[in-house]
Image 1 (cartoon, rainbow, N blue to C red):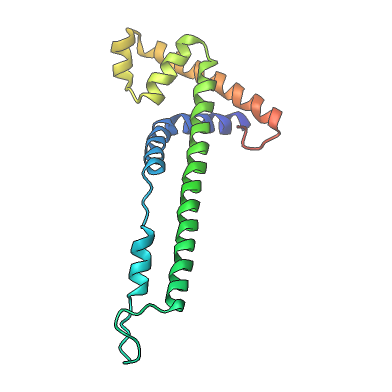
Image 2 (tube, rainbow, N blue to C red; image 1 turned 30 degrees about the vertical axis):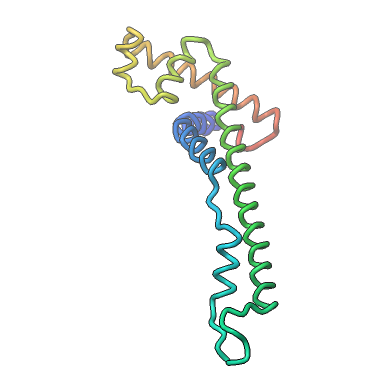
Length: 169
């Protein structure tokens, strides 16, 4: 029973691999090109957001209070931008660790098993494409895949025992 759950987890992890690779690309782009509002845009929009026309102050007068609010807003905006950058970096690290773990575990399989697992799950090739490319019968491909999955289940089980983790990875 427990092995069935672990096998499902292994298959889910392998199926997520292409999506994880896409996430890395997107997160790296966002990390390199963060969307930011310039300080002057924020301060200008806040400082001149309401007209001063009570006759005492000239038009366009900026009070200390308005500037203090704008400065506080700028500081908050900077903190939020930094938090966003940190969240992106943290998510990128997590996703890259998942990818690295999957690639390492698959690399521990026998070469023929690893090849089928990589091409089917990582590269998203169909069974027909694999048959043509590898010149193998469908049963041979399925056997290699199943043997590879069994070996991955063993790895997940072992790591789960070592960690004492209920998720097994």
